Amino acid sequence: TERAYASLIEEFEEEGLCEVDDEECRFMHDQIQSAAFELISPEQRDSFRGRIGSILLRSLPPEELEASLFEVVSLLNCAATNITDEECDELAELNLKAGVKASENAAFDTAKVYF
Image (cartoon, rainbow, N blue to C red; front, side):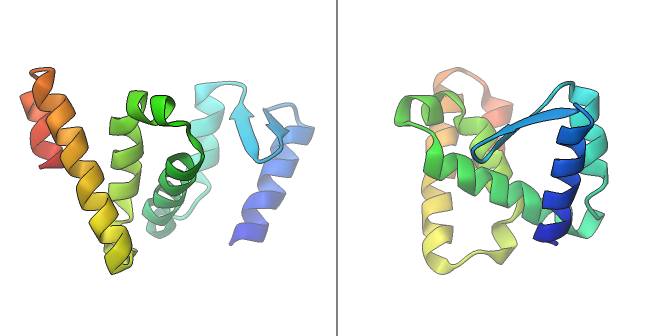
């Protein structure tokens, strides 16, 4: 649950494993981030990834969103089965945009993922 995650993040911060400011959490090492992610139950991981994607979509400035488009769309795609019709339309547009961007860079295997 969200309260349990908040408690874990607080514990990680106290141990010096991550830094938290405002609503951002940065782990001190990739392996720590991976270990923290493993604490989330497998059936909740896609939902968690989708929430991260939603936060990034809403909070990144347009130029940063464009630079991170593949990562954000991939995160959102993880939770595609649990979204509203409106969110589905927006996600379809983002997938199209990511597919076109990949095609323009001759990354055709990547483009197939988004089309």
